[in-house]
Length: 599
Image (cartoon, rainbow, N blue to C red):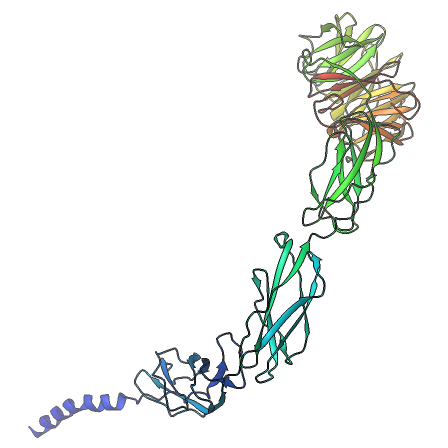
């Protein structure tokens, strides 16, 4: 029985021992650091303070259990603060206090945790509070000049005197409605004149501006504002005019309307720039490229005669310069006539024989004939042609290539004669997308485009010879024993003898600058010059037979002298030029050329 009684007593008191052993005493926070401060509400720190002036003091400490902490300050003037609200352990605590009497004061702090475990007081922080001196007086601000311009710094003389304590001074200026965000400079001796600079930057500053100043001594006493001074702010001088525009293109023998030309100019301070073209049009304002850098713009003139091109620039305040000196350009037109928009649908190939123009009316699948003034004569080929491309004619017959892999021969009356190449193939006399076609006294020469070759046939269609091309080609022309082939996929015009000998090329590669080609679709020769239909650049380019670039005309559009994907060209015996303006569904006729520089 005694055994069971002892066991019962142990079971009753064991939990009590466990509870007592598991309890651990909460630790008091660390003693706060020595307080610091004597900082005013503007954030300025002082060695001494003034009576009746509120200053900010601060301290911090940590709690071992990382529990929240409250603080109390002893101000050294017989007063203590109340306990603060609890803040996070390690966070800096701030509190303000002012003193009503001058003297030396020792400030200390203590802290407690949420269990009211208080620390001892910290070490002392000693401060000196003195009687408040009179504020500095008689501040003044005087501009060194009466006026200034935007972005041009102006200097002012600033001065004030601290008669009560001869403290050093800081200054704060007000520029119209704009107040300096900081007090300027380190403290300067009372009575010293300092130079303060200010720059007016905004258009709204133009006019009469008012400036004033106030001073603050080392103890935080701030003077009244000075009497205001006035300054006249004006716009800066007008920007310097740009340089005389320069024509960036090479010097042409003739400058044609509806043809883009590139001009450039430079300037010292070009924020924006505009060209005035002298034909009633101006460019939009474009960003300048910086000091001394070229600004280039392109323009197609819409009037004839002398056009004086000038440039003007604007600064950041949108002040425009005077115009530059002019560049004079004599704009001429070689346009004569246009026709066919009511009859043609995507004209491509074109040739002339006995003063009759033969035009491939591609989408209408027939041939249309006109006189040299554009008067309609006849149409033929309907029901025979499927996708006609290019055309050639001699004294008795007309030969037409068809993209459906055959060539048709007609009498000039339009009567069908024969069809060569009945299906696509690579054999002799077979075709794969035939395009350009020309004839001489004995032979017919055909661009067999996808087979990358020229085929030479007899006029009865029998095979004679062939030679290779390096790229797909489109139209071609013949003069004497020389063939000129527009290789539209190669962006070049290849030159061959009628025997197939490769003797050179025309064009300077792919591109849109002078002499470069982009999808050239046809070519014509007149006297010593080669005229290339530069299709994707929507222009005609003229070269010497030795591949020297001479002149160009045209640009993309539907006005007279403009083109939209032109694909055919022919020149009559008088030098008049006829162009198939394909997407515009018309033929355009241009003025006769000569051996001189003009067309």
